[in-house]
Length: 258
Image (tube, rainbow, N blue to C red; front, side):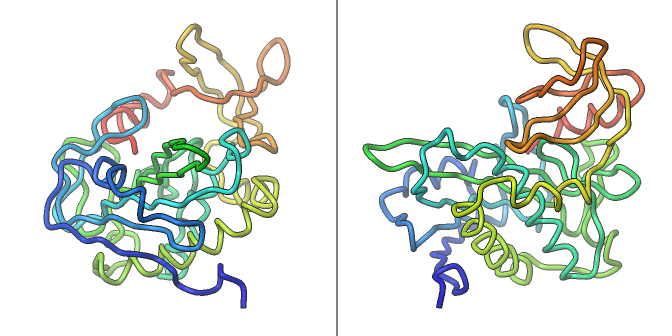
């Protein structure tokens, strides 16, 4: 039996923590290649998203960090945040709901309302690379600080508890990780594109040093956003949307980034 078909997770549940990512970082010595760790909390008081933004979560939401020890060098982990998006899509499908994936790390309803987000951090200690995956999902309600957000209850029409959701996420994430280790992001690219949000839209992205405007045409085989610009197709590794056409979505991303 493949190790990726069994449940190897060490599960740590805390009543309240500032950040599950910070707690998980102190527990790396417990993580082995065949023994990943998840830190989950009922309440996260200082969650954060991409580029240091605040992650807002309501009581009863999923706030967890999953940690794997990687046999791959950090450079070969490109695109894994998008893989986690496909995991959450599959989790929602198993529960009976359909969601879409917005590059690089948001899970949305068909109407563009944010339901979940992902934050990936890589740490290298001695000869090991650790992949820390922060996942936040609105379960019963959406945070009032975040416009254009919603909850899994609104999508499914019923309540889902953390106790019901967490084992399903663990199952799908471990299976996807095994496939990613063997095949990389190209094995997931078509799946991600089949649920992509915003393909064909014209957007402006802030890349830090410059702004770029173009039409989203897909993602590369390493998970970069493919943007058709006046000078050709650019592959964008990191950036956030700033155009006025979808400014509310940008506010959601900034206020509640994963």
